[in-house]
Length: 618
Image 1: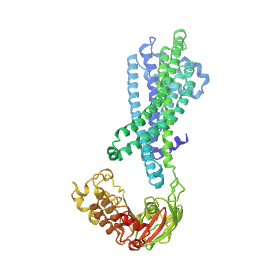
Image 2 (image 1 turned 180 degrees about the vertical axis):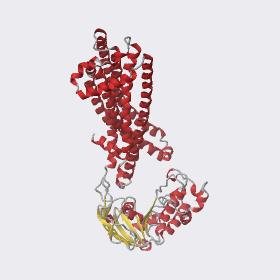
Image 3 (image 1 turned 90 degrees about the vertical axis):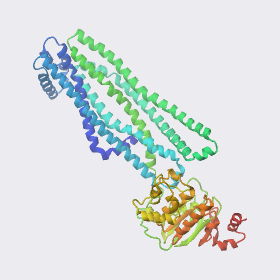
């Protein structure tokens, strides 16, 4: 229940709507019970042969029970009954029938008005709560480090924020509709039944212990299977996301049948689990109803005997009692599903709160400072790093510094630690040991947002959003001046191809920018970095996947972006880094060579010379 109460804590901001919904729920339950009670005077009016006066007599069953009730309760009951009967039965039977019919119409009118209002305001609470839970989970995702996303499947995270939050919705109505309206309806109807015949009422309660045992057992099973089904839906979402993202590879390798088989295997497993859930869930309602009807049959027999063979119960009262008892079935059946819905919602809530409760390993210290500018140098002090799931060092005791305005190139074989090194600068990861200092300040002592404001990053796998070219270039900058956007695009060698697009800067470039070429995407990402105007730039193999013509255009744009900026460049193509101030050659996490291009070429036994000869052997 801890998870369930935590879900309900998100309802607090909507307490006004919730109070209105609860008030309407109470009025709905009272009017629903009144609509049942009105059957007694209606039957008396239609079928009583000895005049209307008999109807004002107190029910015999209540007279027998009077000694069990406090005097003030009896007085209130007597005054209400006398006033009601005096209004309804004054005049002849036709007048009484008209008044009863009028009461029935108004009772059902207001009952349905309050039912509508209750449903509307509760829907407001439900949808608002779902929005807040989904927003909190999504915003918390942005606070989690890159290591978290390396461990989690994207489809699993998407499923939790979409499917699981939708399942949670059921628990809101269960708490504030079913757990208020249904018990209140039951109490009022039981009160009516007791006022007519306490013996018959007690007999009808024989069904309750059996129903509660069945409901509890079914609820426990449902929570178990609900957890399984949410995990399976996450697997389906993951496969779908991966297949759509990699559709080109799937088609190129002719793997459609393989992917289809993998997907249908998961959907079949999901299908079987859902069938188990529906089999269990749907069992509670018919079982409860069968027990209720069985007891109802006994009640009808016993009550019929009281009517036919004694004067303790009138026929109209017995029919009123039957209406009240059988009206109890819907709320009891509904209550039998509440526990199931709570268990299902709790299982989904556990998966959502698993995200929300994940503590970010990289976050601002309480005393973190703002870093407003970069003045002097970036220093790497005895820097070592390994990933959480491994003890093998990716970087091993690195020591070097970079002055403002310098261009530092990182070269080496794949897996040497180049990308990991530059990922530590914006704190995508934190060093296992050692420090990175900007102007002598440990970046762990700096607010993350201010640190990343100083940085611009262009990677090999450029990510663009399914928005206009203008929005992608001015990402995060709102209504930025158009002339500045165009200026950045021209500097990045992107303006010409943008103007050839159907809607120029307003052209939507598709998911991940797939409607344009790799070189065009790269130039847009450079324009985006230019507009941000960072003081430190990081290029992670920004030209490695481009053709010669695109590479020349991108390289020219990169060189413009490097001007008056401190730059870190990772490049496999050594032709792009000849003008670097300093080149660091990394192998197995260590710096094995340092120098300019000319100096490293002169070292005939060095790894850099070997790379150079391999690339330019012709």
